[in-house]
Image 1 (tube, helix red, strand yellow):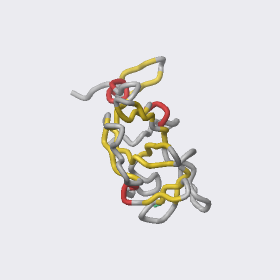
Image 2 (spheres, rainbow, N blue to C red):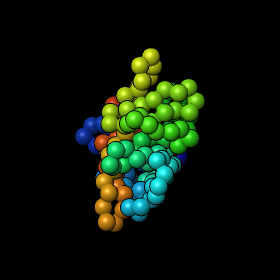
Image 3 (cartoon, rainbow, N blue to C red):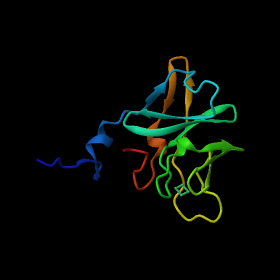
Length: 134
Ligand code: FES
């Protein structure tokens, strides 16, 4: 039997969205080690953890253009570079480099706490509800 969407405040949402916690732990505080980026799966999301300045950000792992794995890209000068077509994304805003017309990358700051690395997934979603969910 197909599951029916759950409604909250009149907006239909999926059961997975309804079950998503307010905060998601990505791993221990030293998860990234000396790397600049690495893939992370947590809370049903597929993300890339990226060093950005003195902090960390998490971005959706699939490129919003054609879904390339951004964990195979690289980061430089505050941008994450897609390995397939070489568009790059601002790590503060998710904005794509000039010349491309697809949506921005979902990016969220990572909170570094004694008990681990945390994100607030609702900061990552936009009108289409996308946040790197499989
Ligand atoms: S798949 Fe990333 S720029 Fe095309």
